[in-house]
Image 1 (cartoon, rainbow, N blue to C red):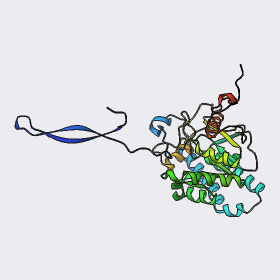
Image 2: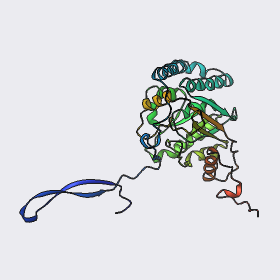
Image 3: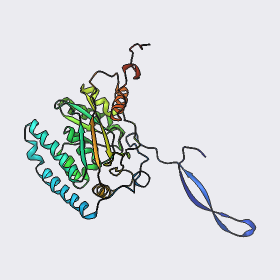
Image 4: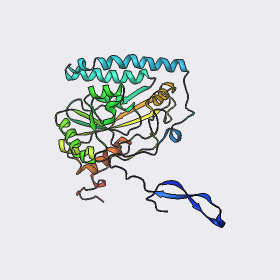
Length: 314
């Protein structure tokens, strides 16, 4: 059986032994549609990756968390345009505080270590686990998000992302990729921070995907630093938690309910050292270095990176 074919369908055929007609199934191999280069997928799913035995809080407390989060969230959405008219310093302090307040209202403790450059063009990148990743990155530094175009039509989230000047990607059209990279580069040159999840899909947190290279070309073209951020979700005892994961066939409401019912959930946000512009030779090396930083691995030396022409030392 060829590995190119991954879908089995059954169709019935008619056999005539001894003039008796009977129907038997015969497997027919059907070639799956070729995946798009802009549509990476992850093997994670709620059934296989999200722990079902995590400590849970009582329903009344979960409802209180949900209601409190709405009370914090809705005024922020309504006041978004007014806040946008404030000077950059006060505006970013308000947005950072609001994002932390939203996450905390959901019952998640936030621990942030390190800080990002406060001004100038900056590409923030992190592994993608949950919808919580978005306000957590904004709590580090408010940024224009990079998101698939479908998000624009989502209830609540669509309004928030549109008002936040999100850069939307048409992932079904590979030909749109150069234009998307150019738009990101233009935003970075204008001094904006742009936040992206280069895996292109959410993973459960215990497993992670590889950083795609395209978005790093925008940072190279704009000559701005890349800011890796390490995100981890843990229980109060320090064990890794997959409760916040938003993967597979999960609905947003199901994922939100799992978060507000989780007990002792902690979000750890570690701002890693930025990767200076011009330090790495190409987008492949930049993506690799950013991924290693986001995973907390030791930073590679120039000799370890592909494309480096520096002589190696004994």
